[in-house]
Length: 80
Image 1 (cartoon, rainbow, N blue to C red):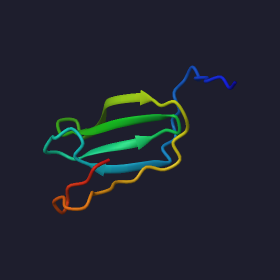
Image 2: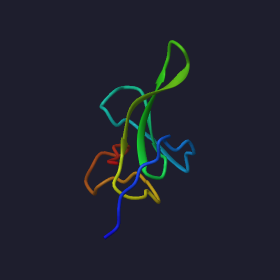
Image 3: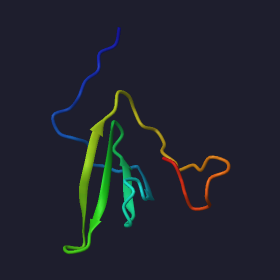
């Protein structure tokens, strides 16, 4: 049996990131991977900075993230 552990401080490096429209908003957003955590960032136009919309821990390690489009979908419409 293996135990699942979490650190006190969240990871800070970003080895993987993808850009898209994930929440149905008009502006583009970023999904970032922190190894064991996924984050959704959006650009705040008033302050010109990235704001964190949502983060979640995953039960495991994230090695790679990539966008894909199922056959028959509209060009430019990706699923993540």
